[in-house]
Image (cartoon, rainbow, N blue to C red):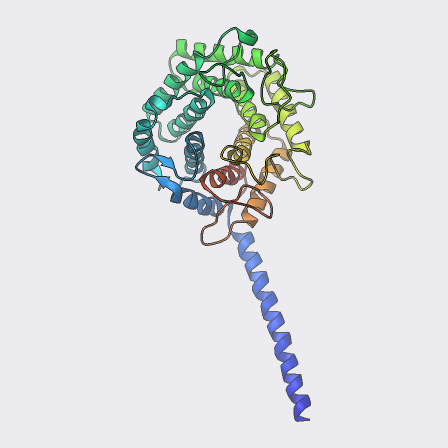
Length: 366
């Protein structure tokens, strides 16, 4: 009887332990679900800033153009959340990073475009004219890359060997953003003229393929080279067209942007069956591909403001939720892949994933 009673007691203890474990698990799940998107983005940005090097104004573990995107991410985060604790970063980078590249110019016009957009985001946040002035100076250098080869467009680099999508998409986006922000009527007209000229050229190059996805660039015969449809090439054009639409109110611009967005969201090469964004390089994306998906998310959020389709909001929140599922305390790192297994973490992957978290907030996630 004593043995029976002991086993009965042990059984009750086992049941109690199971119930307590379940309760703890439920509590953890509830805690995960109750964490606001703003808090999630706060955890992510805090970890991103651990790589920030105040001496250089750049981010360790990643490259020059990636650091421009991280600054953009930080500005967007600060604006949508109202968190002002990182305000000194922009002024510091503006000064310190110019020791690396005076005027934020280098051999690659796409790198320059990223910095121009970063400084316009900093301007939107701070209203400091020096940031807008810098963006304008960078654009002037980019405009020097336009010539008659392939009937127009800018080159990828100052070596003038390749005309590609990303450099020209950035040229369009920078021109449209400058047109919306400059106060000088003559300059505004000039920027708007460049944006129009770029879009008219780009839309007739064939880089937007029959599936409404953007390939990497043009071949030696000025035809679509049918190289990879990277996610960021689908994204930057959305931001450029959205910004140009704000100036011109031409529904054809939104129609084209919506078609590219829809193609991306339905492409098996870019979006999986669960609605999670991927790039073909995953999980080994080198130093560049790790940045791409966040750029798409950021620009899709911009398109949503002009064309508020529910599928865009659903897509962004779905990806933000999947990213959050892989963020573990205390670091809350974000890997190169946005679904398990999440892969390696560095400043580039962190800022890219943070872009998606911020995009979710900007479309209404709370």
